[in-house]
Image (cartoon, rainbow, N blue to C red):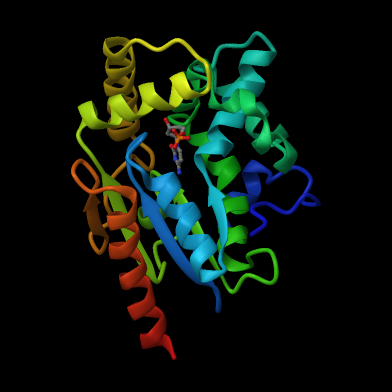
Length: 241
Ligand code: DC
């Protein structure tokens, strides 16, 4: 399933976002939130493929913003630089492998705390949810604030989480598989710092929506998480017919 249409150019202007209603029209939207390395990305991709929905990994938008700031030699904590970078993000950039580096990951949680950055990226996410690229009849968006802020009317909301230790172990494995050096204690420390920045920021912090179903993957494997989530979605789809 195609994730992001190549022809949307730049994503959004900051002044578009405030006026973008949080409605999804007839599109069936699945909102998945959770901390880093909780398994939400893998789950979102599998669900999108299974149900024929489009998938948007919204973390890539913040990673692309951070990448552009770092590439210019800028400071990710500088609101003007970060906001200008958010307005320069293109769909093509979301596929850049450099977005997966730890350097970009750490800077992405810094830019994500800047209200102007979030506003600049909001309209694109809502447009993707409301009108996913054809022929998809629905969309799966994963991130930190999808169920609470981006798509509060989503048909299904999931909060995927796991202990920091389990998530750090997964991230170390992932990094080593990509040939990067990774020390468990350093990755765990970075992860805890990133969790704190994502959860404690003023605007759209990482949080489970009141009506989200929590899936704890500390002891569940990917197949078990998929079964739980796909059952919920199948029931919600059946209820719509
Ligand atoms: O899911 P990820 O690790 O690719 O996300 C990168 C950063 O982007 C993460 O630290 C928090 C931020 N983010 C966010 O604030 N809101 C989202 N909807 C998605 C990601």
